[in-house]
Length: 182
Ligand code: APR
Image (cartoon, rainbow, N blue to C red; front, side, top):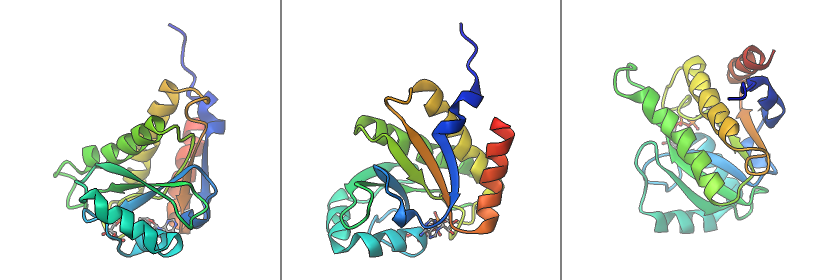
């Protein structure tokens, strides 16, 4: 059994500070709500840039449960696709929030792999309006992505970006990156 060196994944993950709607990747992930009909935050930004055709397509999806991921085209976004996932609303950590947030990342990555999507950008799911503590959420995000990178080589999953919109979020994701790959 070869020893798997997590550090080899360092070049396949990147933490950046910016606006996910500007990412020129195969797919960006949207932190949506169960209706999938748009909202505020990153959901609002993605619908605004993608244009009205995105809403026309999401109307056909019949919503989504927390932890689920559904694929649409990207329309006017630079990204070819949007993977819409519904994060858990953080209550107190005793309502299966961790498992549900992990499912958002796992199911988004599964959707990417099933659709030959090789470069993907995630926002910090659930850490805005849904109030998930960023430090804990970042670890769940990193662990899910690392597991996927260890199971799928670069020919399947080339690069995963964590796109932080603010300094605090960037700090927590970058701190984890340094911890894992230092
Ligand atoms: N690019 C990247 N990240 C962004 C952007 C953007 N353009 N805009 C906001 N964010 C960040 C927020 O700063 C936060 O760190 O996305 C993270 C997630 O925050 P929200 O967008 O509020 O998402 P979430 O906490 O999952 O709440 C989802 O909010 O917008 C509504 O319709 C959405 O009801 C759903 C809920």
